[in-house]
Image: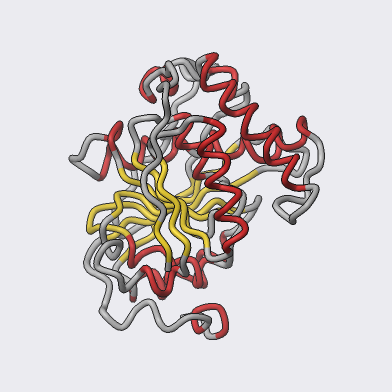
Amino acid sequence: MQCYPWKSARVRPCVLSLGHFIKHLPGAKSHSFLRTRFHSNTHTDVAVSTTASCFKSLSSSQQNQIHLYVDTLLQWNQKMNLTATKEAEQVMERHIEDSLAILPIIKTCYNVHSSELFDHISLIDVGSGAGLPGLVLAIACPDWRVTLLESINKRCVFLEHVVNVTGLTNVKIVRGRAESCGHDVMYREKFDVAIARAVAEMRVLAEYCLPLVRIGGLFVAAKGHDPKEEVRNAENAVRMLGGSVLQISPVDSHSPYGQRTTVVCRKDHSTPQKYPREAGTPSKLPL
C-alpha cells in the first residue's frame, strides 16, 4: 500500500464555510432536513429536499474547482475508464449534484450524534474511483480532512493529478484495499465518517467501511432509489461490525437517472478484530 502525502498549493482558494453552504442551500428555509427523530437502535425514512442546485450555492472559487475537476475527468476518461458519463452537463447532474446532496444528511446526523465539530471532521471515501463523492466533498468542505482510498494505481494517479489541478490542500490519496486498511493502525477506527458510492451492496460496504470509523462516527452509503430490502439484509452484518442503521434518506436528485437514497449507520462500539476479513472475502462471502 502506498500513501501519498498531503498536498500543498501555492495559493489556497477563497472558499465559504460548510455552514454557509448549508444555510444558503436554496429551499433550506422552507424544508426541514430532518423530519423524524431517530435513535441508535431504530431507523426510519427521512425526507431531504435538495430540489434546487447545490452547486450554485458554492462560492465562485469552489465552482471553478468543480469545473476544473469535471474538465480533467472528461479528458482523462478518453484514455482510461473513469465514468460512463461522457458530457460535462451529465457529469454535473449525475455526479456533482448527487455528491453535494449528501452533505445536509451528513450534517444533520453528525450534529445529532456527535459532540465533535462538524466543520473539521475527517472523512474517508472508500473505493473512491474517480473521486466521487470524496473530491467533491473536499471542495465543498475545505476544513475537512478527506482521504480517498482507491486500490487501482492508475486511478490514484488521476486523483493525484486532480488534486494538483484544483489546488486542494485537504486531500490525502491512499492506494490500498479496504480489507487491508481496516487492520492498519493508521486507519482503523480513525475516521469520523466513512462514505462509499457505487461500490458494493450494503453487507459488503459495511465490512469495508465500519472498521475504519471511530466509535460514535458515521458510515454513509450512497444508494439508488429503493435500497430498503438491501438495508434489511445488511442489518445483521452492520450489528456484527459494531454499528446500527440510523436512517434511510431519500434525496431529490437533478440526475435524469432518478431519485437517490442515502443510508446512514452509526458506529456504536468497536469492530471485532477479525473484521474485515482477508481481501476478496467480503464480496465473495458477505456477512
